[in-house]
Amino acid sequence: MSLPHRLILCTCPDRDTALGLAETLVEERLAACVNLLPGLISIYRWEGCIQRDSEVLLLIKTVEARVEPLTDRLRLLHPYEVPEIIALPIVSGSSDYLNWVSECVNAVEQDS
Image (cartoon, helix red, strand yellow):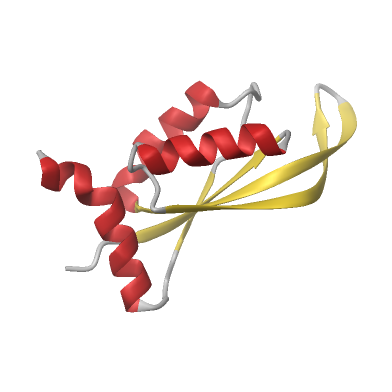
């Protein structure tokens, strides 16, 4: 049975924050894998002013059933008042890889 897979995008202010969040999400089986992409420059409006900041982007692979608890965990741990958390559907991919993602994040249910 194939579960709907998701790619979550989340920006972080620095490498240490990104590493900590990524490790927590994988450790807690909310994500199978998190890639860190450093070197982003984000330009955005915040509190009426244009901001420009260096950030690290997290690419978080999970399944639909884990999106809500993963989002809740990110909101709790993230240093931003309003963290970027965007979930995108994965419409296609290697079946071996997507099965691995499902196995990694669903192990908690299997262990119960």
